[in-house]
Length: 445
Image 1 (cartoon, rainbow, N blue to C red):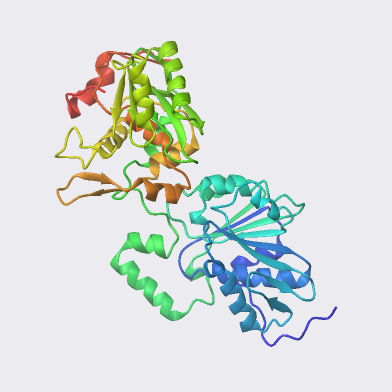
Image 2 (cartoon, one colour):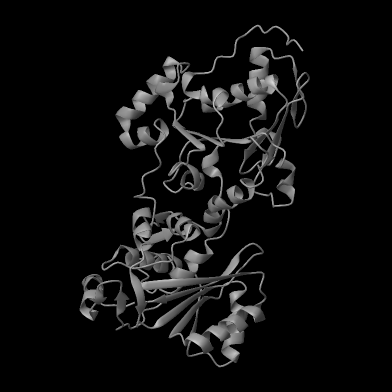
């Protein structure tokens, strides 16, 4: 069927030509401001939707209304090019000739059942992909399963550990196309935008690199824990340790949160046990079993919310000598340096990870996201303070339960004269283990 004559020609800049000419499972475009990613994606999809019947899903992490989606951008491009074969509805866009359809969804509130409507999608466009959580991606990826289907991703990187960057672009396979496109790659970039970019470059090279060149924010002033120290702790070097066992217990507060037990012996954190939807008695029973089986020196547990009930049960069972209740929001032991216990415990994790000799964590990407995903600030007295847990949860798509359980193992000083058994290197002496810690502090954790 013959298309209606167009009054404008849709021009796709050269860096975006693979959107139309190459078949890849993943097409991952990233870069800074004014690279033209959103325009090029919209125009390319409108072209493809006129060539054959396609179901195209336009996705983002949070979409409270159609106004939050790329719906308006597509409508504007249809109007600009006078694509009269497209019919615009309140919540979808259809091509009257080919039958192609654009639908719009937010991923944050989707579960496996609700997202099944995407199984027939030919192309999924994820806009502002830097906000996509690991959980959303793990639900979405296996759902886009139609033969020949593609996932198009456009993003301006925010952090070094953006979930989709780690999952797809950091080490792309042969089915993944990764392209960086900035304003100076965009032949349609207005001169005024180029002037703004150069002004930013003169003012701050770091801002220029992030805003205009698409580089992630450098971990430093705003990040409590750097990614490299966590990655280093993932390298397996410790076989065992004779240090006393400390368990951190973070009790779930809300429906999607996890109850997490963290097991640490000195420089060796070797396990996390995670549970969902356990009532207080079930959590207390699990803790009781661990006490009887592993004989921990201490269990430090969060007693905010549901944790208080678990604490009372364990205390009634005679475990008062082992358990210690901790409020994250209570006063710090070192009140002059820390805003609250939460900041104090997390800073102890940071010091532990940064110390020498090397510590060890289970290799776990969700733990990595949680540890490196929290920002720090300082109150008016110069004390370390952390961003609110709700803000972290909003960014990660979940509560940082594993990281909080690890932090709880540092709630109070515990005397430790143990020795870790190191791979290939025999025993490390007590003096080697704790020399650097003595230099920083007289407290042994």
